[in-house]
Amino acid sequence: MNESYSGPLERLDGNRWRIPKSYKPGMRVDGIIYANDVLIEAIKGDKSPEQVANVATLPGIVRYSLAMPDIHWGYGFCIGGVAATDPEQGGVISPGGVGYDINCGVRLIRTNIKFTDAKNKIEQLVNQLFRDVPCGVGQGGIVKFNKSELCKLMAEGSRYVVKRGFGWESDIEATEAHGLIEGADPSLVSDRALQRGSDQCGTLGSGNHFMEVQVVEKIDDPQAAAVMGLVEGNLTVMIHSGSRGLGYQVCEDALHELQDTPRKYGIDLPDKQLSCAPVHSNEGQRYLKTMRAAANFAWCSRQIMTHLAREAFARVFETPAERLQMNLVYDVAHNIAKMEPYDVDGVSTSLCVHRKGATRAFPPGHPELPERYRPIGQPVLVPGDMGRASYVLVGQPGSMEHTFGSSCHGAGRRMSRGAAIRASKGRSIKKELLDRGVIARARGRTGLEEEQPDAYKDVTHVVGVLHDAHISRKVAKLRPIGVIKG
Amino acid sequence: MLPHFELFDHTADMGVQVIAPTMAGLMAPATQGLYSIIGELVATSKQEAFQFELSGNDPAILLRDYLNQVLFVFERDHRMLISFEQTEFSREHLIVNATAAALDPEKCVYSHEVKAITYHELSIREIEGGFEARFIVDI
Image 1 (cartoon, rainbow over the protein chains, first blue to last red):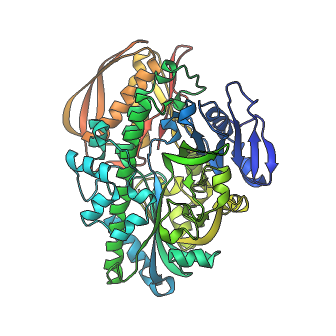
Image 2 (image 1 turned 60 degrees about the horizontal axis):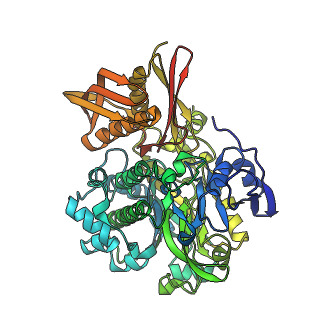
Image 3 (image 1 turned 120 degrees about the vertical axis):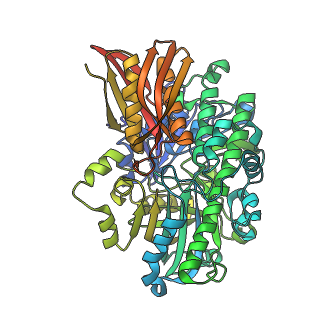
């Protein structure tokens, strides 16, 4: 069973808690956890705050080790963790700060379909998506890429698959980094990773990954919603997936390679899973180049699934996806490390920002945003659980000041998988979801039980904390009506 | 003491505790524990040899690397280990000679996709009457 955290947590204000750097030897900065009074009680229930403190020991860490309100226990880093390191001050890159599922992320597609007009077709639509979008253990994709194609795909990102007919040109602009992190080197990706990924691009996977049909239930920010094309009562599609076996293997290869690296560079770590190397070292650069390749793979994978979703909608509604105006609102990574400039003591400094279960949340005016989003800020997509809600937010100036341009990535688990299964005994989660108006289809034997709404914190609390802290502002609330899972 | 495994909870993932009278005896239940997380796997009669040999200085990492190989064979080749002919496991060396069989896709019932066997709380330790291994898989 989980052990709870008994170390110090000092309240800074209504939304933040501090773990002072005096808590344990080796901490270079304080830990800061974003949470309200309700969430902090759940957070203390596992060892994730201890992991926030452990991350604070990483060489070159700047300002603080951060955790978003959806924090829960992970490996090395907590899920919901953010840490920025300065390469010029010996700063490190840690694969544990990205996770196995490199560029796990979320994308949102809007439509002009009114729920009231489509009510009778939702079951047919969910069944069609379940048939057409490969999901679950052992399910290969509709395209099997050979080694040379995979290398091109990882070098070119989303544009490679769009050129092959899987999506629209406009999708590229609506994807973080245009679906391509520069500096990837696919030639360094192992054969084993290529073999694991060869037939998995464009597949959903299992675990907490999903494709969801939703209704825009409430608009909080009409101006931002209008820019994104979100209309109250209309359908949206949300996709949550990552880099599949290829990314898992890239992480695995890096952790293996970095086993002895901390000793080589004289780095003391409180947890083996925090293995790391200086950003400027050969080992660090090698990981960054392969991680970027895996990230580009993940964007291609979500791009292919976008194409499959559009085709399914077109079939069910007997209307081309273009006429259904199924435009990509945005696509964001939430497991990634990127070099980004921040003001450190008045000097613009390129930092290596680790986001492990955290979403980039750039404010209005940021030069990396697509032109149409510069007046409102970057869309931040926050899936909740399959029974309650998900949210669309926009980044706020506070994110640059306090969280290295980051926000939360989801609701965050509050129950282990085992506990969720035990809590489901004698119940039909599928029927309970149906009673709430959600049609669910899952391939895994226990997927719905493990991912039931009660297994997660209430996402409304999570996004509320970051709204109140001026990190990311609420734009729209999305209610699930259909979900497919692996 | 009969070799056996039990699953334990971890917030988003799952852990396996393995008990056996010898270190070599940990291998079969550790493998079964991993398979039990993936689902109810059913093999066909199409068999071939599986060999794994690795040296190192930490037995827990040897076990982890072996399990990652088992996972790779499952994912890439759609094969599972069905019997162990010879296992040798010391603090520095691991040898596994086993028989693998192709999976029957019609009969397998899957529960989880395992991403990797992690280093998180990974351990092998001597206990009264044998050994205990613990590992956590990322789902």
